Image (tube, rainbow, N blue to C red; front, side, top):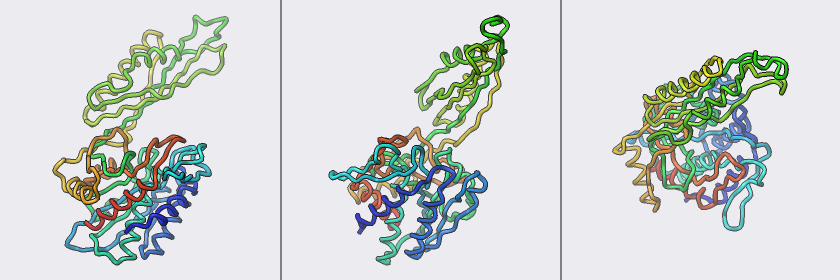
Length: 369
């Protein structure tokens, strides 16, 4: 019952709207107007004010069969950079890309249009359905800053489907890691590099030694680590007195994350000691791990709906974070559902007409199930 042309029209229209993290206003207004036209009133919260953005999360409740438990369906409104002046290019084979100089924005416009189409089909055909809650979030790409500020006392649902996973429609993520980011500041002593180099303490060399020793990549079962930024120094003729490194740790076992961080701290301190430098360390737990029991009804329902549509229904772990991590902290059992987006966070991002249709059909089936 889904309408391919309507899906594509919505997709192209929303992609064309600039929607960087902290400024999702254009997309938010589009969604408000669209939902109102199909008879759904959506309310915007104050997450933007709390997170330093222009826009809040958009929430709506649609009454349904009271004998069925409500479900929340969610996608995010922001996109990563480069995103200004995006456009969707639909190729003859059904592939959809950007023009090549921006991201496409299927992360997460594909999720948004899937939910919109399912709601439209329900409304125009007056289909009986379960109670439905919709939550379109802001600032997801900045470690879920929008969903972190949502008032979860508003939600009636205890289960969620977050349409925000790359890969073919029919798979979902049932577990995701804790993500911890850290900054280590190496503090040395400045001196003239030509006349008094021996009087200086080289902060960059201390930091580089530490980076060479910090394990990166897959460092254990269900654990990855990375050092992604190193910066310091003022001029070529000054022994640098300051250098910073930024890294992250991802771990499916939340309890192990701080242990890995402690190892990084000890490596940094040891490297600094070798040069007579000191360190200062700060960290932030951006999101916490979730793991859905394989016998959960949120998985069982997903698998049944996928089977009905001829999809795989596979549930697997992902090393990516999403709003579902935040939902889990608030007692909501959820899956992150694939929408057919690929090569996300790059100008090579793509999806396809067929995948957008399949995602909309899956959203509809879940709402009617």
